[in-house]
Length: 166
Image 1 (tube, rainbow, N blue to C red):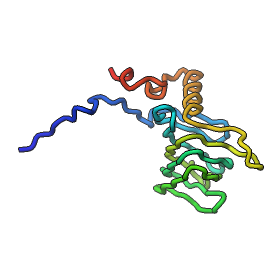
Image 2: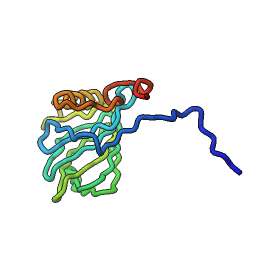
Image 3: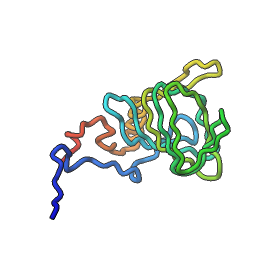
Image 4: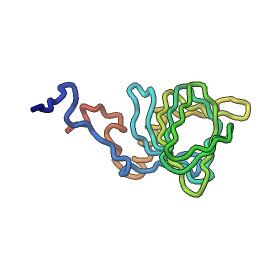
């Protein structure tokens, strides 16, 4: 008879984040909101859900690190290539990639994004006009929570895992 043996290197109580209970935080682009899921150690990157209402455009931007994007629902159109991305499609964007895309169809487009480094938004001459990164995503999330009286998940408030455990 075999018995399961607990791994002494794993915590029995790791905090979980139920994205269904997390708020959609509106961003500066109308029709765009996010659910911050995790910030990587040292603010090296972040996981989030992006929600775009139909017709919403993500302006031209450059990635300083890798980005992994998985479409959960809805469709998006990569404006540089004309490629239509639908539910269940994974897209890898290497560091240095420049692109722009738009939510298309009748339903919101929801994408799970894992981004490393910065996302630099560009003007028509390719100059950086603003950026987002793990720090700006966390600050945006926390500011929205404070403004709306919502307690942020401990892992998103910059609380260490040890502090978050009961």
